[in-house]
Image (cartoon, rainbow, N blue to C red; front, side, top):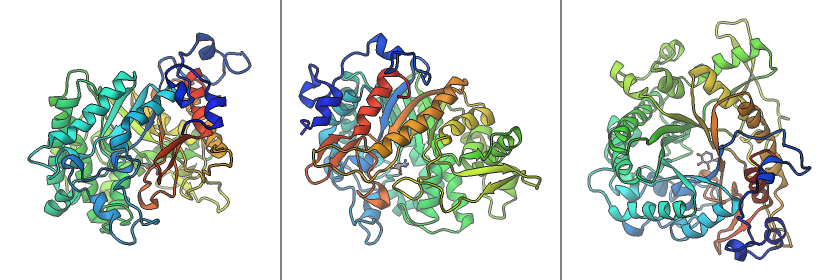
Length: 487
Ligand code: NOJ
């Protein structure tokens, strides 16, 4: 399966992984310091910058009924008629549960030294709380051991949307504070058992999407269409769950465990880089993230958020919990959310409408604005004083096709990545404290409502045979990692 020309030509043949056609040879100092022309690359990243890939449990694991796993709201949702565009589900997905060793080799072949994955809560607590299922946790023990044996540092996310169905049935899921409390208990349990090997833990992935698409638009599980006021309350419970989990992890994890979250911050970009527009973009970013990052990092809601007729019900104690100090902030950055122009109005900015001709990638929501990867971390550092930032997701889907020669020439993904990474490099060169980057995704996988039709992987997956094939972008990313620079 690895014998296509790409792997041979572009990755070289070295011992160990030679059978896969991928070289994992040591990076020679000359490679790290020089570009293809022998010059020191202009676009180099700081020494020690962490390069990795990211995935999530429901999107890749499959094995939904194995070793005691309980159902999640995504199992229920995906099996509900009309919810997933290609009528698929995550029952098998990438079969990663059984093929994790092979998948760790794929990471190794890239030269990646970190990996962000998520833990399926219903594997660990099939009923959400109460009796744990040690066999479920064992899968992650096996995965961690495999990663560490391959010299890959694990970064674990505790919640990437696969809520145990029982919590939805018993409490109404995140519409209830009880779910926030159950999340903290689950977090404590996992932290206690895995923090000997996992040193970086993310609480929740993309609070904003799970609230908006899951509880507002009904496009993600659990598929609810709540009023704005009800959504605000859900948002509050999710943020509270994050804060309770931070405290629970601190209390139960090994000393030195670092804790954060991974958020798709609403990213407002100055339409033209003038001091006025930059200031306006900062005001807009703070305001449009009022329920999440602003509350979490400042310990208060903005006046505008509270002036909203449907502001959530909360106590001062809730806000103290929500803003429990984190060690780092993860940012999922795909696209510019808004371009901003400074305006002499009450809010101080105008969000420019996107022209119909604005370019996008394979998914229409995925507008191409590489500077998003400069502004997101810069805003987090400037607005909230964040001292350690990880880009926890960045990447694109592409209409990848296996060419007649068996290769996937995803030059559009390479174009996207190269341009975004140049802007990330601008950020690090200016001292914005970005410590690492996780490319979404290692392998094509179950892309939620789009099923298997949107492919984000560096490795193409044939979902009939589970065969993984490196795309040309895998060669690109390997070069980036090897040189610690944009190539
Ligand atoms: C963000 C989500 O965290 C991830 O699950 C999803 O696949 C990517 N965006 C791409 O849509």
